[in-house]
Length: 169
Image 1 (cartoon, rainbow, N blue to C red):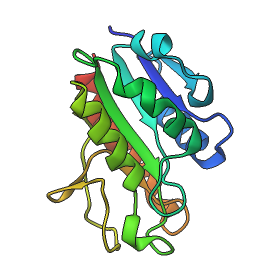
Image 2 (image 1 turned 120 degrees about the horizontal axis):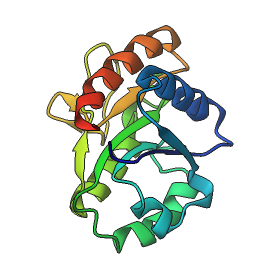
Image 3 (image 1 turned 180 degrees about the horizontal axis):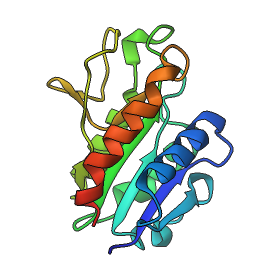
C-alpha cells in the first residue's frame, strides 16, 4: 500500500477535528501519517504518493496563510504520479459568494502540476452563491460547513472516505 499523508494545520481546530474523523473513517487498515501544513517542505510533500490536504477557506475566499506560503514551492513541483484528495471548511451563510473557494484554488494548483485529483463530491444540499471549488455540479473535494451544517459532516466524511479508499490502495 502506498504511503498516505494527511496535511493540515495542527493549530486549526475545526480542520484538525475533521482530519481526526477522516483518519478514523479510514480505519486501521490504512496507515495515515499526520503532517502539520505549517511546517511543510517540498521534500516532505513529495515523500507521499497519496495525499489528503486540509484546506479551509479563509476570509473572502483565500487560502490560509500556511498554504499560501507554500504555493511558490508547490508551483515548482512535478506532481505526476501523486493522488491527491482535498477537504476544506467553509461557511455558506456568512460567505456565500466564495464558499469553499480554497478547495478549488488548491485543486487547480495540484492538477496543473500533474497530480490526479480524486474525491469530488456532490454540491447538493448546500445553499451558496458561488464557489471556485465547483466543477459542473461537483466540488473538487469534500467541503464541510461546521458553522451551519455540523450534523451532516460525519455522514459526508464517511461517504467521501469510502470513495477514496479503493483509489488510495
